Length: 347
Image (cartoon, rainbow, N blue to C red; front, side):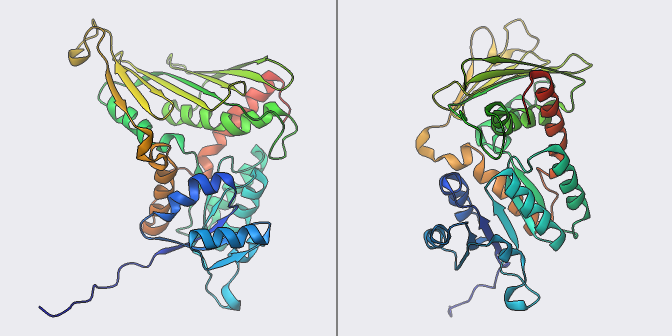
């Protein structure tokens, strides 16, 4: 048989990356590097050396210390060097990139939080709605995209609707203000708070009542409890804090069939059910089903970074709707504004 040549496939989506800091180097850039049909073309960082080094390390041809160059036509021509941008920086930077890129038809993945405040986010949602057809805005909430969390939801799907959501997210930081926030407490809400509220609202929707309380542990550490209540009796309870020595993440979901799913961090999932619940079957008595994700498997899929980028990439490539649009964040921000009001946290 004569030698054959494969027919050319679909051109790779060309990505520009803005903000190749520690988080990006540990999570987003490795996940992007193995994404099928994606090619990292350019890297932008404030320091030229950091931009050049990240470009060399991750195989990009171009680098710059001015990210706005990635939104301009290449060499004065009509085309650009990139098709989409991935941004990992401060909320102010996220908002600046979105504000500039979306009207130009450039799709953008931004890490959460996408904006420093609700007013700014509302204007960005207008930009999202007015962007050229096919332009995608995606906010990087990795928790609901994790393999273990998706396994939890798939396992519970045949066992009734959710009645309660209980989320615990505590960490060792922040212990000083970050991202332009004036207080540690607001930095905590911008960081862990957006994750927890987003997860609860994805499952239960907009609450009918919000109650929040704060306990100061010392001058730099606190715990914030948030209760989201629904008219039909459903309830979400959220615990946020910066008093641990590491990130601790625990999520418990209970269905109206009394099936309980507990995800401990990203690695262990247990499912149980009372022995006298109708149709208990394999989960009779004190038996549980357990799934483990060993650490040696690699964390980008388990933690959701690979899966969220894949979802964004699919939207850009195939014209699908964003799975995490800016508009969906508005209610998250409004819930957190009420939490600030009730707990006395200065924005």
